[in-house]
Image (tube, rainbow, N blue to C red; front, side, top):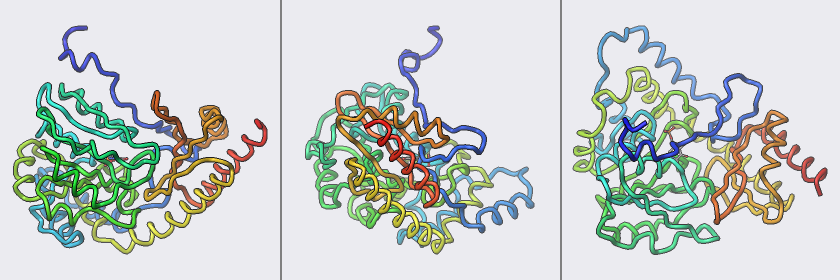
Length: 352
Ligand SMILES: *Cc1c(COP(=O)(O)O)cnc(C)c1O
């Protein structure tokens, strides 16, 4: 068409996993939580609604920042609220990476990072994970044009984690900030909030979409040192979080008991899924997230995805050309994952 900036017309655009509208699918394709959120969330939203919506919301989400700071062991000015953590990633890309500059990311990982770089007119530099999902030290290599690095930890689609000691040394050698995307950290044994306190170059993003079962609410946040938050606040939309999501997010972060109980259920189901898939012959790395990644050289995996879809079970088939292909299955309820794994077993029996 020629009306748009050339970088916009050139890109394919990020395609999120399928979101069928209508309830007949078992959805194990976008890592949503299978359990309902804390009932306190809906209650808080209802109460906020009763107060009316004619006024603008708090532009920085003060009440959420105070409570989240207590939960995380930082101060409120270490937190930036976002309209989902995708908003946080957008703010960071805009804040740090200019036209023609570089954003580093590992691959295979979250595909949105690359799209954000492309929209910005920046170049993304993809560093492949090793075959065993360890991260090469070259992720920390300094270079002139490099302005920001994104690293999901636990990673998607693998569910694997990079050890903290390595993250520390990578951040030390990088010439730019390192964003550790902790979308799945609530399902993991450890997290990197303490690294943020050690090094202003290390920032951590979180979301309520997965571990708080609030993907529909759209709320995420960044944890970084206050001098970083202060600059990034200039980049965000003035009212990037609406009054209802702020009210819901506050109630959600306040209910840590719910998060802990949810994690306990997910971790048990995750272990069972991993074992069953391995018994069927898949290679499945130990996952620290609410999904598992299964590969199987010699067996075509896309037909498995299609067979499941015909049977109203959605999982994610992912292909990283020249690197790997696999299926990513979100942890559902025990009942949902049993249906899914029974179908995979059935498919393999019929096609062996
Ligand atoms: C789901 C996901 C997010 C996005 O979370 P939202 O808060 O829903 O925008 C960010 N990073 C990774 C790695 C994810 O998987």
